[in-house]
Length: 364
Image (cartoon, rainbow, N blue to C red; front, side):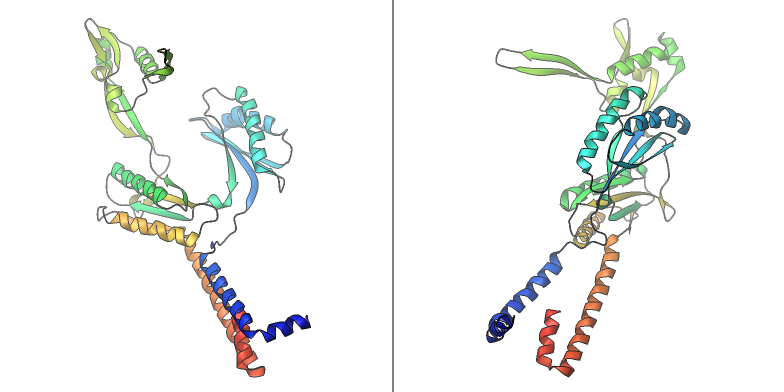
């Protein structure tokens, strides 16, 4: 140890150079390191979500949750299983032992869910398996509001979402919340269907048979083969209105002859307002390991750029901005560090000399 100290003292220029490089390296690391208020923690928790439109909580418990629990309770490594049923579906939450391989758990859970599929209602949507990941929670919520038609507001939100996802590589996804799903409403006129000797049931059968993708097999021309399909899935309102539902002599009866077709929205499940005006929100989630402060700054810059082409009465507000909390934490850290350096340099300067105190301050 004495030899090392003697060698260091005899090469003051080299020691000062190493100290300067270390200071520069530390400064660059501080500026470029990802700044988080909470670390990315891997929690071995999965939840199975199942939705069935219109089902009651009691039927959901009996027809959905119970068959899933019977299959999932035989899984190894599960420390706790909780389930909840509600109107429109339910979910089962599985908490595995600490350190359990979450990828392997997902595969085994999928096998159990597939085994329970035969006991679930045929009209049930395929259950989804989701992983609880703290890093996938939104870091910023963008709220758009204003007195303008719902479709116009939704269009602005969709354009902004696409711009954020494509222009900021650090953004994992941006989800729109509070937007009603599009729907097509068909109002059948009883008088008109009677004049064409049709029934409501026959129209429904014709409508259902047309809205599907039909595979016609493969065609081999000698040089190779390719698949043939009959595209019958509805893409526009015009496709729905032009469906032939019956033949009347030399002419065909189309849906528009017996019904009124119009574009609308599904019934709202909730309402969102900001300052008394209709609103829609965009939840922004960043990728794991990315700099949160830089990500939010880039997103806000895109919002400001897009806002220049929007109507003046469209209001933009931000909430759940995690960068504010991180800025406060960094400010407290910097103030504490500066105060510590001042106290150390001042105390050592009065006792050992200002030159030694300055070196110790740089090291701190």
